Image: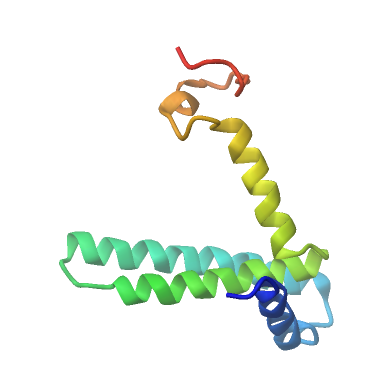
Length: 120
């Protein structure tokens, strides 16, 4: 994958959506509800694969792609690049889990955690 792939993908999504609504509130509502729907489809495919013994792995992949489409559309709406969002997430998670994920977050009980503190 070339280094400009994320930008090309985001530009592609923008070419499809830029003139789709004349009302920004409806536009972002559609994208937000769309991402929720696609995430639900991912969960449904996983549920069917595990509990119904009905292989839906390709459905998971397809719906993840649709979810990414809505993520790109939301980024376009707010003027963010996908790279910027991914980098922000990497930065946040690197600070939160410097030694990898643990169940420390589950122990929070509403308290603010110093993510740099050693786990007890």
